[in-house]
Image: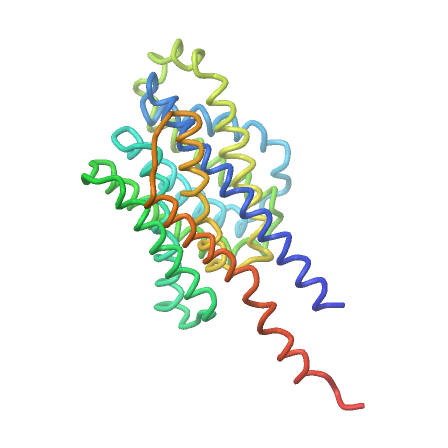
Length: 297
């Protein structure tokens, strides 16, 4: 029964992370649209203020450990969103999704260096996913000035995923998510304070996009990921999130008219093979383990 429950939880976790990858794939295009009239700091401040308002009723009782760990995650999350939003000012949504996919490499490297552990199927999946992202990015041609910001965002996200794996089990998902969102909202408002009043009209014009980014792209995504990491490891999460560039390319083509060709298709196929390894890897290994663990009759 315990094995069945573990398998069921893992399946739920995988499905949740794939859903998050699809949502994140759409947010690059939405941010790109919002940045036509808004600067990065104002866009970030408004979307996370909306998200914070949603979570205020669910924070509940606070304790020092919850506040400390929520603040650490919130600081990293602010870096993830701030760096990626700045980068999207000068880089296409299509390319941004690919560069952000470098987090699959950083998570795997951090696991190897700091924890000295990894699963062979996850390592192979990470190599495939990263190679696929590289092939998809190659199609973009010239280096882009926003790449460095997206690179920094990927590093921050890798650290965030690893720490969240450790902290998610100790707290309520709603409470931990709420603290993170509040921290990001506060930092974003401080960042945007000098200019936010001058963007009131632009905020009203983009309220639909900002509401989507706040409710779905910020609040829902953070809650889903905090919950999913109770069931799926950091390495697996990073590989599953490699689907974001695939979804990002689809949404960028559909919403913004950005084109992609043969390299994108080849790279996307490699990412999907990596995802397949994550899903079926344990199923190929566990039957042998179950046979050895059966007690003698």
